[in-house]
Length: 155
Image (cartoon, rainbow, N blue to C red):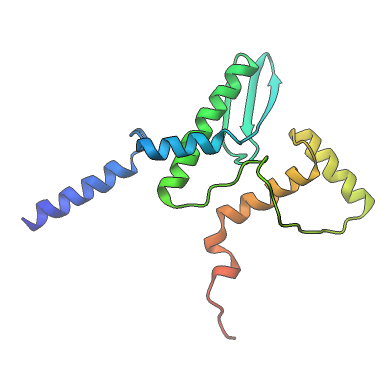
């Protein structure tokens, strides 16, 4: 009896962690509403269109036309956001969402030019979007292992 109970809980956990299973309808609906506020960065190479999410730069898609590429990227974003919702991870707000906090960084003129060029090269609307995406991506991915979340040790 005990072995079968353990086996059924293990199989339930394996089923829940499968990548090819559908999301719960309410999770999927929430993810779709969230992604509506997301922006897609597009570029073309060799006649094919490629895109990625501005808020989740690691989520990408492609397509033969800009419209199909955007649709594919949005569908990938929905899956990524649904996974974040389901696992309790933080979901990034849309780029158009009102932001109330500000961080000031002093730069040399050359550093500012470098950031502007990188932002334009990567398809961002401006330096703020570029810096936000670059700073938050590793912060969100490594928050649990960052020094701020580790217990201090005495030496």
